[in-house]
Image 1: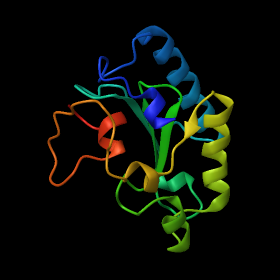
Image 2: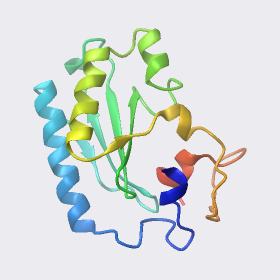
Image 3: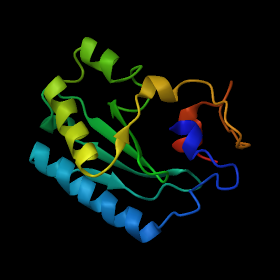
Image 4: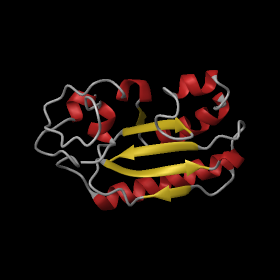
Length: 155
C-alpha cells in the first residue's frame, strides 16, 4: 500500500487530494475518538510542509494506563498511525502494551474509530523501515529517511 500511494509527482499530497473532504473526515474522526473516551481530544491541523494532515491527542487522564494516545492522519488517505505518548516513544503499540503504557482496550477504541472512518492503521514499526520509494525526499533528519518521513514527516 505504501508503494502504491507513493507518487513522486505529488510528494506532499496525492493528485486527488481535497482539503475540504480531508478536513471533514478528520473532524468526524476526532469526534468519534473523543466520544469513545468520553473526553474532548486536542487536535492539530496546522502541520506545515508535510504529508501529514493532522494529529489527534487522547489525554492520558482518559486512558487506562494514564499515557496519552496520539493519532496521526496522512494526507494520503487511508494512512493513519497510532502511538502511545508520542511517535517514537515506543517502537510501536506492541512495545507500549508490553511495557504497560498502553491498554489493549484503549488501542481497540482508537482503531475502531479509524476503521469506521475508512482509515488503515499502519504500524509504527513498518513506518520506521528505510524508505525505498521513488520520491526524492528533502529529508531533514539524520540517517536514512523512513516511510514515516514520506507520509507523516516534514519536507
